[in-house]
Image 1 (cartoon, rainbow, N blue to C red):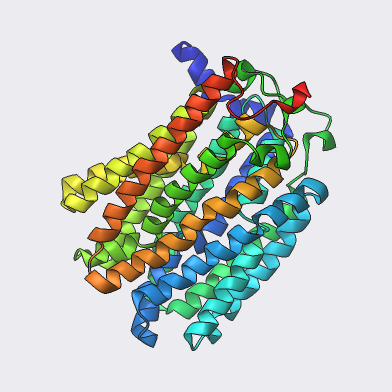
Image 2 (cartoon, helix red, strand yellow; image 1 turned 45 degrees about the vertical axis):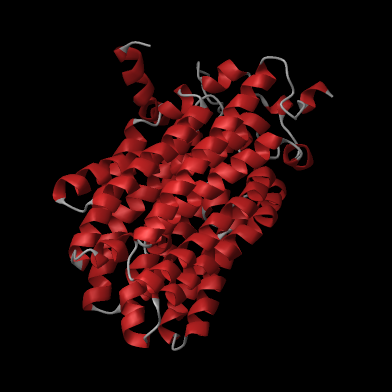
Length: 436
């Protein structure tokens, strides 16, 4: 592909908007949803650690346990959320979710004991599962086939955008106004964005408009993955590829999300100021956003398995660098490598699931995969805090992350081997449902 063709491909979302394909408006709105929701929760959990520990005397593992509970509650709901949105749609789920989640934020100033913190974090997670990752990935994937990787890449840039925008704001609010006011701010902002966007902009499926996505030559068209070849949930879970994808994502999330939760506390433990740690986080998220948008076309050009393997290996190298040194050159290298690797992290699971199993039952299959892959998010943050409480150092946790990334790369490599075997005539432990 020439330079001119690549430039046209990168500019396609803009020209697509002008041609009024509504899917790109869905992408824009969904990007904002991920930015707001991730900015006030996903990126923000670690920002409250010092304030909560200082006021209540809780340990790092006790506060981290509340975050682990968030992932546990979210993961357990995955199959139910996926089943619901496959049958009843995304918009109703998102409206219920944002109201309940925002109210949990507004109630946070009432916290006076550890069980109350756990309760409100659990309530917030209960509702967030209906408005956050799975519904948005499903919605955008429905609107795109030929440029699904690009659409998901742009949408998931909202993760980085949320951290870039909200991290410094919340650090300022926590340091100067207090953590209670920061939670109130988060609840108001989340409600103010989600409700009008969900009611006025989002639509469930392309069939609700008269427009169809323009076709193109991408990895999806070359692979011949069409709706007729979609797997049911029961068929998918009987394949080794499903479980290898789930294992690979579990290990990736164990490392990636645990480190994200503890990023600011880690750098502060190395003598960096709160503002400096927040600046590092903002640099990561700012670069993450730019990379995601600039290289979104890679999701439709690079084989999905290769994208998964490179994602975890880049993060492995980044963690190894910061484990050895937090000097300025080391931090600069870490920020670049971590941002590049992390930028593709949220893409791995939905792209692999849709590539190997199709879209007809995508929500249910992604939810089932998330039920198990979320275990990494559940165990990781708490175990990381527990190790810090024992050794007063994050080094053991970072060594654990490096090992998990290596095993994740191995799992994705096996996915590629089985997928290639199937393409060449073997069944790889699975059979195409369209052939039955």
